[in-house]
Image 1 (tube, rainbow, N blue to C red):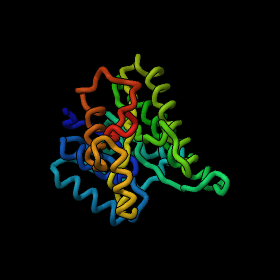
Image 2 (image 1 turned 30 degrees about the vertical axis):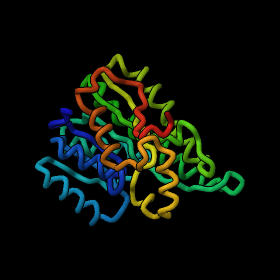
Image 3 (image 1 turned 90 degrees about the vertical axis):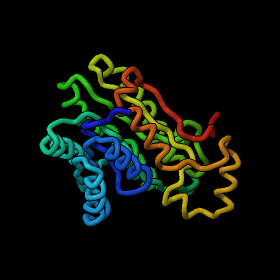
Length: 247
């Protein structure tokens, strides 16, 4: 998958899937700009890890859910890297709870962080992409956005919204050679799933045709494909990385 020297911005890269995406891109020779909201020390540590792979990397402490910060971020990336070839909208949170008990704040926080951030970064990024007449936008949705999940009405709504947004952008910008696709992870081993009871994980795995949870690197590989030139004729698609969960 040819991502050599592509300038790619990844949001929410400090841990889990975002981190795996940033590392995979850097290993493939891409120049990586990434955002984080954890400590500056953690951001600097990841920046050093990425640079150690032999590519240019820079971290930005930026909140993607804030429209003004998103615009400023893209401008900073353009100033530091000279161009922007792809954006991976990965930033996301959960505030789970049954609808009867879900607060307005829990709803708003998830929609703001998971869905509005995708609008913010995409809107800012397509400006230089339209000038370049090329670009790839990859949005991280979820299988939950495709089928729903009890106790996650806010999360499912945000991820379903990403699917509709992805397809709409593909239709709007295809004529400008800007592609828009989404990746829908299933049950993936991350820090969050690591806190689950082993029996719960086993029960989940038994429902998956491949009989195992996925790895963050499995999602990263799908993202690399959609960023790369090998997917040049693919847009408006949702690639499920779920071990066959929704088959």
